[in-house]
Image (cartoon, rainbow over all chains, first blue to last red; front, side, top):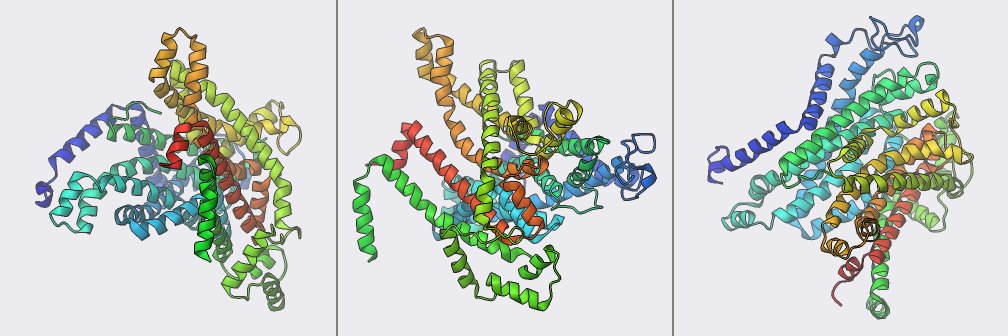
Length: 294
Length: 332
């Protein structure tokens, strides 16, 4: 604690992080997941240099064409390059999923901390609201909210955040309830540390590592939920190259051009799988007791 | 008045068994939750951008003239204060009146109930597929830990958690209906119509349930009573079937409660992909037609089904596990 007060890194925390990083580095599946995520992120970042064609350029003369040198995965029903649309699609799917998760955490973590740390009436009120929101099947409520707000990625973000923050609030509350009774928190309180100081310096660090694991696993779910709502027509609107929308666009051409549905689906599954692998690996690395994978 | 009511309730409760007392408390706890659900459901219409009456007219293909908008607002009671509107809506709900569908002109409750059997049929079939796949996979991967079957089961669980349901459904249609011609493409009819949508819904869930059952089995297999059963010379299939599986399956019941939420959400997409005439497809159609009464009714209805399903799961858990029964009833 003294070291932290002097602004120096805590050697114990550093040691724990280092050993977690070593465990993660030994997990081949987690590394594979990280590799896929980094590759997709690089593709998204370098899309203008990597995509061979304009993802929005319509060329009806080339519609539903098979793969060739200039169109590596063929073209869609409007003659647009599928590969270019997939690459540019990563620029939509990944940031929107990340942003939605960030908003969820920004709402859920503080509410969970307040609920767990303050207890009393604040906790009772928050938990009743959580109970009520949990009474809805998650995707049903998200669908209804997105449907009411109207199609669009921002509305999908709002709908998912309105439903999903509850999970984080409840998760964080549980951790805070356990941590706030530990000796180091009691000692900090006895030494006159303010509530804000206790929360930021002693409780939040304990909250962050399990939340990181949960968030990594949820990134996969988020990508699936966003693409699912886009598939239903509530997310990205044409001609935006979003993977779920691309899949929905390809549905009428299933018999003649199944590749229109194949590649966007593989992209969604690949990225979701990568986040699940990394999340699994992070959970094992950050909690060495959890050696038996479920 | 209130103390008298409290006294009567206490008197009534004292005479009940532990189980019935738990049930009563559990049901009473649902009252504020359902009320909260009703407030949220009612508030959903206020999320719609612009004037709901105008949006409905536009969605219905009518020109939203000022007179038409005002007439519809009057009909929908939108000019009344919000609490009056909520009171009216709640009174209607208590009388099983969820309003009238703007598109079909029929009562929403009747529309939802007429489509519920299709959704329940799909959900039940998906649950059967989940159990048929998850139980053998879970047991085998626990018995042959770190063997090929275990690795395969883990890989399937990860894949199942990452598969977009709508994509899986479309791929199954392409393979089994378009290419092989084994099964019908979409719609509801005989059992052959049910196979693909139920598989789409059940496969993802089966994968994760198999892993959870495996973890439960591994924990149970290390317990003393299993060692005793083996020491007594019981056959392995009896040890597994009668002792281990029964105890390892308990967490599965809770998961089924959570799974119902997943299934109800999943039916929306699966019903849309397979043109299955259930509640979910009806809701998606209502969303695009701005049929607010249906959307509102659907959300409330689904929450009610979810809450009741979880109540049943809780009750079955208490019946099956005496430890939980005593713990929840508290000291007597």
